[in-house]
Image 1 (cartoon, rainbow, N blue to C red):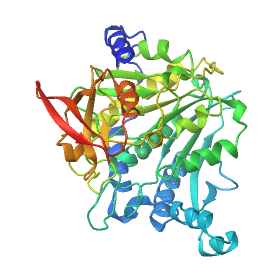
Image 2 (image 1 turned 180 degrees about the horizontal axis):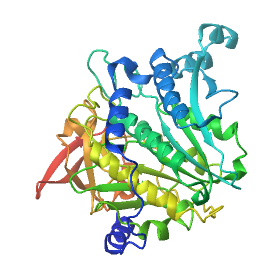
Image 3 (image 1 turned 45 degrees about the vertical axis):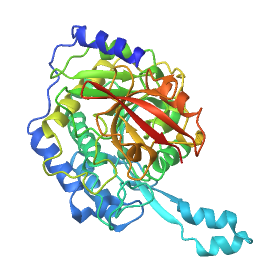
Amino acid sequence: MKSLSTLLVASVFSIGCIAQTVKLPKNALGRLELNVAALANDFMEGRGTGTAGEQKAAEYIVRDFSKYKLEPKGDSSWYQRFTFVPHGAAQIHHKGDTASLGMALVKEITGRNVIGFIDNKAATTLVIGAHYDHLGMGDENSLWTGPKAIHNGADDNASGVSVMLELAHWLSKRPKETRGHNYLFIGFSGEEKGLLGSNHFTKNPTIPLQNIAYMINMDMVGRLNKERSLAINGVGTSPSWMPVINGISVDSLVIVTSESGMGASDHTSFYLSDIPAVHFFTGQHEDYHKPSDDFEGKINVKGMASVTNYIQHVIVAMDDEVKPAFTKTKDASPSASDFKVTLGVMPDYLYSGKGLRIDGCKDGKPGAKAGLMKGDTIMKLGDFDIEDIYGYMEALGKFEKGQSTTMMVEREGKQIELKVTWE
Ligand SMILES: [Zn+2]
């Protein structure tokens, strides 16, 4: 992606204006590890929205919120409940001859956001959020084709919750006079079902929305790679972001930014409410939405500490921004459902070179059948040169089911040609 590589270069060569004086709280590493491991333990049963496992995870978060003396800021407790009708059930309802019959068969599910507040008597509030729900034993969003299994979601998103808890710890101990905003912490549920918890919060906020200065979302921050690439999505949502980001250098993190406020996580709900919002993300991987997204041997706890420290610097740099300006972003990415065909691949969102590098293929989909592999970079689809993910989306729109076409792919420095049949 052209624009991304320019930004990447800019941030790599910038000299940090903020000295690394913002330190992690003592023993942060131990707590980050303990919390991500606990939330990703089988005991939490994959934290499916509305399940007993979700309740256990919610209680775990409440325990830490209480310890750090946060104030409950849900609907009259720590919790903000919301209900929804599961996806499959909703379809029965719509297709049924009698709506009431459909409804009678459908059991509503109740999910809960967990919300804690630190009131610093400031004019505006910083929202720090991370979703704590995951796929339970596997649901319609699972990419696992094997027998039912607990989806622990260590990276997605026990990692983000663990970083949120550490930030709550740090902010609760920060000298009062240095605090620029009030702090609202939200563990969202229902994210995997379609940003349900964050959507519910922005429609039923427990503090006035107009008093929110900005929002920070952490979703999948547990797999910092060797290149140390940390993605920050949504930097176009306020003119304040890029100067702040260019002024920070922490632990040799390589920052890759993207503009759009529309993403596949909870910051989107805030962006859609005209609130500057960014999403921190350490990248896609093969275990995404599979039971193998585990803690053991897979989570980079030191990397999580670097991400936490980076966000601490952002919060300090934003202290004087009482109400940063909001800007709408250009949202070039059409949704997958706009296409008649799909390859069934996971793009590598941290890749900034030419072409579309892929991080994995969904079994049984045209990409996998054509022989695409993780790490391949798609350079050409039929007659269309693929510059970046947007070029790829545009090219996809030109094909119909039943057609076949060739695809030029770069694999380990060599160009190979694959034949794909759209279905
Ligand atoms: Zn997630």
